[in-house]
Image (cartoon, rainbow over all chains, first blue to last red; front, side):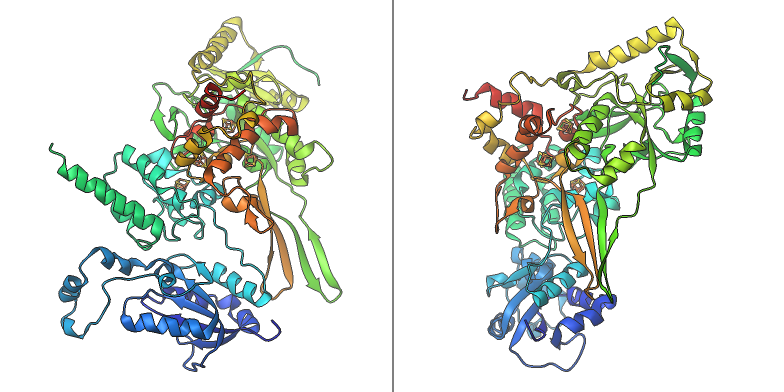
Length: 267
Length: 370
Ligand code: SF4
Ligand code: SF4
Ligand code: SF4
Ligand code: SF4
């Protein structure tokens, strides 16, 4: 591209953590501004320029009818649409409502529930519009975001590794929790991005970066069952930030079937 | 070298003098120590850091530290780390370039000044180092970092006196006895260490331990300690039809079955002491005035590793597992004239779902299409 690409950042149902990581990239921010023209970024500036945009970064999931319409307008206004973070790519932690009764939750949480108008589900952006590129993580890794932006400016493919978290554990010399302690860890079915942070700090992986490409959840869950983990313990592990990612959703749903079978079995 | 035929003996506390001497000579001594509920390899300053009185219990997909009922200093087998991390580090910057007023200036990798002394190298691990020597040093292209570190390497081998359920070095003819490729090789008995000297430097260094010639009783107990390891090895791999068996059965249904269990997580290739794959990436800073060429361990289980001509060549887990096993046990022979497996059992223990290559080979053989 000869002129600088015009960048817009849009927020849907989310905590703002992912878009803030763009501001956190303090050392790189000036260089980024040299390469892209930030046209619409409410967290950073009240000067919100209208579209069309070359690149739209989408944070957050779709939880209201209004947002379902708004994402379509954003799509029409944007050449290249990138989802950032677990909310946008997989519905986020708020997708837990997909397995609950939203009205009950609204009634128990808000003093005046009549003002709340929300859908009964939280869904990823890709269920509503075409997504050109997805950047995973809860939150995203800002180095990856910077690489995506620079790659777009340069017209090359972003370099986002898709290997499992385990490879990063081995690079760091972290001893495997599953093998040495019998602790469940989602690392083998989770995409890299954090540098295997949790296993290095004495806990199994929570799957923040979502399912890896080969995500063989059924084999891994078999192993965890053999380690004595019950479906009651394993379902919350999968129904987390990426609960509505298809691989994790399917695996957790299968576990709940097992659970109801277990309950149905006379002891 | 001037081989001393005599087997030497020194008492256990003297091992500290060996460590001190190696450090005085400028070596960074790395050896076994307990960390993260396992026996790993790390820098060792004192013999107190050795896993004295501890052992490891291993099974497919399982590793546990256990107290021993004696105070053995080297009474464990092999753990999650391998020595390859010292000769072929997980991440290395190979080259950098900086933009100057006169164009790009290339900055070669700084000469590597670390000399490592490895303490506690097992027979299968000596064999693994020999294999990586072929990979990195034979042929027209040598790996300079590996060469620099390898040339300066000092190896204190330690004979196994016990084996894990995952060990099969006897099948791969790599152990459990340390026979070559060391400067010193120890066998631990209750009262101290017997020591074979394997090089002139070894001969020189051992002087600080005030070692004396071992008595025949001491040699007897060392021999029976070593025999105990041989006797404990239960796992076998029939190598009579390797190479050939696996490449001759590329369409065997077993690949699909193991592909259904395999997580494609890369752990087996990372812990394997002979796997040598890496990716090289050029990382440019945002201002476009510096580029670093970085190499890091990679694996044929990483889907992206087979990205070629715009798509993935091995696009399912079965084909990735098949790549690993056929390379390790079959095509490695054509490539390097040895097997790629030394029978250390790490890939069996550290596979989260306990996939066992000896079982896979046996299953393929059973219904092999000749
Ligand atoms: S701790 Fe978790 S992420 Fe790390 S190697 Fe083990 S299974 Fe993989
Ligand atoms: S293939 Fe497995 S048993 Fe063989 S050398 Fe590698 S890690 Fe050890
Ligand atoms: S088995 Fe895989 S990772 Fe290991 S050397 Fe061969 S191709 Fe590389
Ligand atoms: S064989 Fe085991 S360790 Fe290797 S990639 Fe498959 S699941 Fe991971």
